[in-house]
Image (cartoon, rainbow, N blue to C red):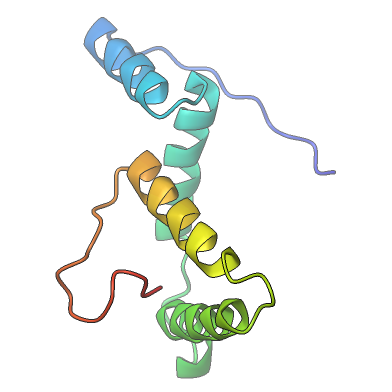
Length: 110
């Protein structure tokens, strides 16, 4: 397991209150909430600009979601696909991302 690097910072009371409230709303610790924000910012800043098209994360994500959905649809447990989509919906809500059901297609699209 990789050793984690501990960081500490000070913020104004309004920012601290916002962080604590957001973490509580998402059922997470303040540490996990802040870590997720920092990791997301790090990923945004460190994405290679000259990536070959085949390695484009957007294309890879489409392929992965289509392949996973096909595997779930063919799984012997008929409830697994629906349970996976429900877990995905909960994760989007936890991350504060919009649920897009008006994009056409079914509500179970990955």
